[in-house]
Length: 148
Picture 1 (cartoon, helix red, strand yellow):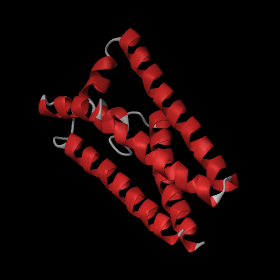
Picture 2 (cartoon, helix red, strand yellow):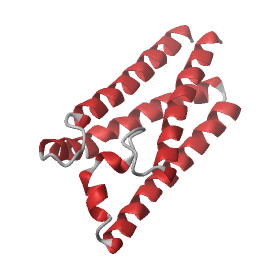
Picture 3 (spheres, one colour):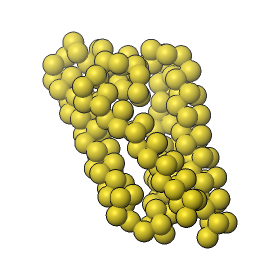
């Protein structure tokens, strides 16, 4: 069972990173760390228009709430699920995270190219970070499959 422990450890580490993002989105929206919205120049601009700022805050809190749902379900799966459920949850995680490249990456890349982010190259950094997550998950999933 050590491979399942590795799988759980990797998923739990990812969950901690995601939880730091939830905290930033709820309580430190202005920060440029933990993938909060402070990196977007539009965040500061929205503050000059109360209606737009409320809308943006609503969407940011919606994302944070969705991440909490996702993290809560993963917590239940890791605590009470079988090793096979952990394995399939990892594949579901890879699939869901990879959707970043469908709509979000092209948009953040466009924003980066148009200087709408406070950190030039942020899109590449974010894309690389998500690729690393998926790659690590894939390695752990294949390793777990071999060990089964």
